[in-house]
Figure: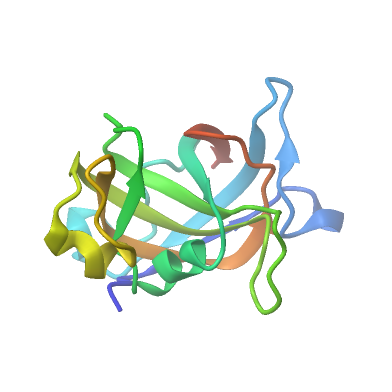
Length: 164
């Protein structure tokens, strides 16, 4: 498993711990507290690049979202490329519901380090067969969320506000 630490994300409302809320701009909001072992990715303990700002997020169907959170899927494939590099919050879609999986929750934060055309050698990391129309988003530094919380997902990359 590639997980090198964890991030705890939870809502700021005491009665709704673990549930993200909507901000006035229409984005999901959450308060973040992160801990990380010293020396991982050059970031000091207790920090994450996106604390105190908005973090980019993407919603994936299950079981792929959980495979990323567990470190068994290190390449996300899409029919479109991304220029985004850095932290990305991985959320599971609400539908379709799958028994045994969290659906509609933030599961982990990953670092997107590259985006390129999918190669045949990417099949194992992507957990799917090669197709010439797919882009490979290369992920590392997987940090599971301590307490998964509900997130209203959107298509494509969207933002979730992470407060200090």
